Structures are given as C-alpha cells and as structure tokens.
Image (cartoon, rainbow over all chains, first blue to last red; front, side, top):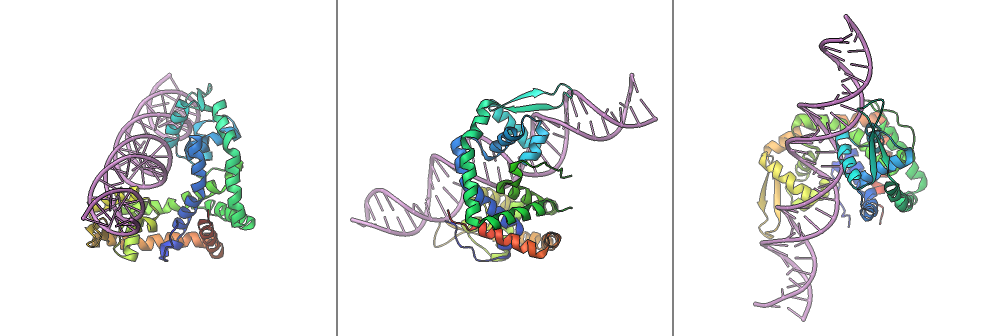
Length: 146
Length: 146
DNA sequence: AGCATTTGATTAACACGTTAACAAAGTGCG
DNA sequence: CGCACTTTGTTAACGTGTTAATCAAATGCT
C-alpha cells in the first residue's frame, strides 16, 4: 500500500517524518473512532473531560492540543450530540465549565480498550525500548525553547 | 508561552506526542511561509516539483503527503497564482503533468536558506545524534506493517 | 469488438487548523 | 469612579483533511 519513495531530501526532513509517522499511527485509530461516531478531536476532548473532570474551554484546548476557535465548534457539536453540557462559572461569568455527560463518558468507556490495544500493538511492534525512547525524544523536541 | 501541563496519560501517548512535536516544529516554519505568501502544503508541492521535476498529481500527492482531493484544490490555487502550469499527458489523457513556473521555483529559491537554517537550529538544539535518532525512529514507525 | 473493471482526477460535504476581528466580563491604576 | 488593558470565548474567512460519489480514459478479458 505504502509505495516506496525514492529519497529526496524531504523524505528525511523532520516535518515530513513527523507527518508520515502521525499518519501511520492515526490510521487504525480513525477506524475505531469512525465506528464510535466521533472524530479524533472530539475523542480527545471527551478523554480530557473523562480523565480530569469538568473544566473550562481554555484548559481543554491546552490539554487536547486544539485552538480555541476549533474547540468552540467542537463543543457545539458535542453539545448537540448530548455528549457534554456547559454551565457558566458563577464567579467569573466569562468562563464556562464543561462537563461530559454519562453518554459522553460511555463513548470513552466503550472504546478505551480498543484504543489501548492499538497503541500497545504499535509499542510492541516498534519495540518497547525504542517506542519509549521515541516518546522521550518527541517530548524533548516539544519542550525546546524559542 | 507553552504552559506546563500536569501529566495525564494522554501526555505520554504517541498520538499526542507526535501532535505536539509537529506543532513545535511548524511554528517557525509557518512564520517564514506566511512571509513567502504560501501555505505549508503549497510549499511542499512546490518543493517536490523543484526537487524532482515535472510530475503527475498522484506522484506529487505521495511525495508531499497529501490526499488527492486536497491536492486538486492546492493545484488550482497554485495555478491561479501562476506558480505552476499543467499539461495533459499525450499517451494517457487522464494524466496531467504539473510543472513549477520560474516564479514558483523562485519562491523555493528565496526561502530555502531560511528553511534550512530553521531545521538546522532545531537539530543543533536537540542534539545532532538525538535528532538523527528521532528521524530514524519516526521512519521505522512509519514503515511498520499493518 | 464489447463490456466490466481499474485508474486518474475532480467535486461535494462535513469537520478541523489558522489568523484576525470582535464582544463581553474582569482587572489595574490614576 | 472611570478608563485603558487583559482575558475568555465566539464568529468569520480561508485553506486543508477525510470520505464518498462521480466522470472520463485506459485496461483486461472473452
């Protein structure tokens, strides 16, 4: 399926390598999420709420790696699907508190095992040491200044 | 600017780590490209054409890591900007041959040094060995079967 | 040759990424 | 208090990601 690409400089560049790697990882995950009826980003939002409890949109955006304008749309969508609810913060009326509904948490519960097994298989296939080393390098790269 | 996130399991997951790393890498590159007046994807298409010469959309899509529907729109845009031209393949009239114009190649030439220096700085900051190791791991991950 | 299948490319529809502009609520300071 | 500034969240506009449907040209098979 993945054809052999010759070897122009772009093949070895970090941006392209990151792009292709993420494409490879998301393949099977997207299959799972399509069955669950949510997008990758909606899944991330629900997971953050499930793992860390109710929180405001700005915090969700940081944790789910989304920009606020995207999150605004995603929250509208999740709300219309009945997967989250919102209420205004009483002390700061600009701020909202988003909460996952039982149905929203249900989607996480119903798919978490599959998600974990997909990632476990990747870790195993790549080699556990190499996998963990990869993550460490990615985190280091992310945390570089400037 | 980048806030400290506590440490939920998602922080260590491969999909999120890849996402954050790519975000970090693309930051400075997007700045450069905004000045050049092209998007990241348009830049990739022009680079492929500049490095490998005229080719058909399907091949461009593979090399630039784009899906064909996206590429169709991008080629329309690049054509309207005068950065590429298209002609039909004479032997297979479904196929087109896309060629970068002098102006298109000019954009690459005008920004290639900046691009290289951004990536060199990242490599230096991460450590050359670790950088190269990271790319090797990403390539291995990408090439896993299944 | 005739017809089903495959391939190359496009279009459509929906969702997200990104930047800029904006509105409303809160904060700081004279 | 009053006003400038900041913060939170939204909307707008444009471009891309993704899947499905579609069309024309080519290919394979009988």
